[in-house]
Image: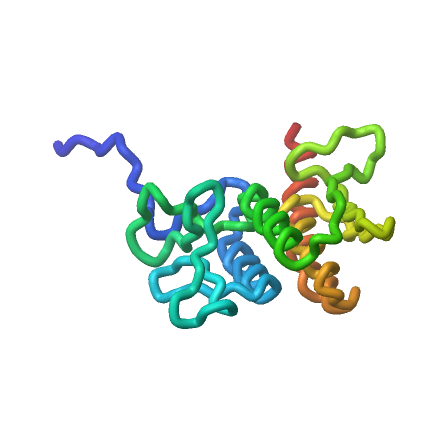
Length: 187
C-alpha cells in the first residue's frame, strides 16, 4: 500500500489570499486598478508605468520590490505579488505615490470607521477622507475592504462621477457585504 503524501501541493502560478475566495473578482480588481492608475502589465507580468517612456517603461516598485502578477512565470525574491484587492498595503502605497506625483495639494488622507466609536482596523466598514491644502475635503463612499476604499479614492481624485464609481465598485461592495456579514455571524 502506497503512503499518502502528507504535503499539500499548492499552485504557485496563482497565489491568492484567504480573504477572497472569488478569484474572478480579484482579477477584475487588478483590471480596475490598472485602468484607473494608467499603469500597464508588461509581457513578463510586471506592473509598469509606460506613459513616461513606452520603450523603457518604469517598473512600479513598492518597498524595494517590483509588482508582478503571480500567474506569469517564476516569482523572484525581488518581486511582490500584485494582488491589490487582497493586499491593502499595495493600494495604500500606490495611492501615496499617486498623490505625491499627481496631486501634491493633498495634505492628509485617513481611513475612518463608519461607527465613530470604533477604531478603524484593516477591513473595517468605513471610508477615506482626503484633505487638500485649500481646506477642501474629499470623502469616499462606505466600503468594507481598505483596498476598495483606496480604489474609490483614486477615482474621486480623478474626478470620476458617482455613477461611474458606483458602477465600478458595486460588485465589490456586494461581495464584501456578504463576506464580512458572514464573518461577523461566525464570531
